[in-house]
Length: 478
Ligand SMILES: *Cc1c(COP(=O)(O)O)cnc(C)c1O
Image 1 (tube, helix red, strand yellow):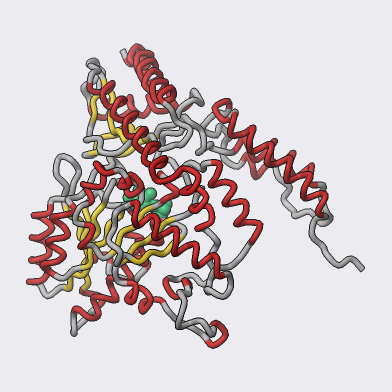
Image 2 (tube, protein in one colour):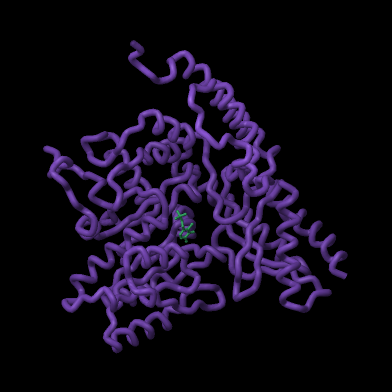
């Protein structure tokens, strides 16, 4: 009788080596791939069998199909020309860490179920805390995504509200964020069962930064109306324009009214390891929670998000349920991360973070991120020096928001269409991938430089393509 049903060791080695070689060549030649996948909807589905295979298939066939069917349907986030959304790229040490984590396949729900997972998480989070210059009373926990980190932060803020109001009423809770806040905040509010009116959107100024005077006014008004303000979400690097809310002012207001201050720094947080950028985050020491995504701009393969909070006890109270079978002898001496969130099981995510921080060092990471910011500033200068393109927001990080305004087009709708076509034309080259947003209800182009393989060459190429395609489109519009 066969005892071990898994792939034989020799076969694993053969294909393991083959795939590492494939990955190495893939990363080396990645700029030869079109950054944006060109497949049409359902083409992958139509190329795959409708029924699962009944009998064993050859590994070589599986790998061949991966190359033939799956790869064409890949949009290459690791591509140096990927400048859409907030790019997340996987560095090679991060990929190796992820590989080992897949091989170990531990579940870090309890300290006991893999002590190294819990302890490496504590150590790496502590490193990141120091790199961000956060006070030592910030406790950290790794989740998959910023959406989930913010959900936990809001749930914990709600826990705090139960102490704040002796006539606590979930229907009366109010939480504030700017109109530029990320959609994950509203999703979190929905998920937690708060009223749809619970989210109060505060207007932004011309730099897309929350008007803190308006915030204060809304809070006072809501108190007057018998509502129960409990939380303010500030954003450090908004999605559309990467703008920064006035962290210091908001923290003062939160302190004055005893509200939870959560900072969504999913993208911008990584850059706060640089001194100049960190200064915009002053006031964070009065916040109760902050989320950053090392998978976004710290070259850790997706997914890895860190939530820091000064109220670990409340976070635990909001989520901890320990059934008999999960009690251990060490419960009083250790952290069991299952107590700090919705999920029981946890992947060994800190391993890839550890690899990345050690391989590059904090100085190395500062250098790479600093370089990205520098490139974005050069790109912004190209825009500013141009007659047709205009910039729509300040550049604090590595995100530039802009659009083209050819002199021949006056109609707003036509301008929107022109810019839409322009993005399409640039993206169709397969060299550069840009995305769009709406700024003051205007269609805008967004360019983000945060990929570990992106250099000045790709940035200049993006600019060249924009100019070239713009010229061609202008002629067509005449
Ligand atoms: C990307 C982003 C999010 C969502 O991040 P996920 O990790 O994909 O959930 C939330 N807020 C901001 C500001 C972001 O940039």
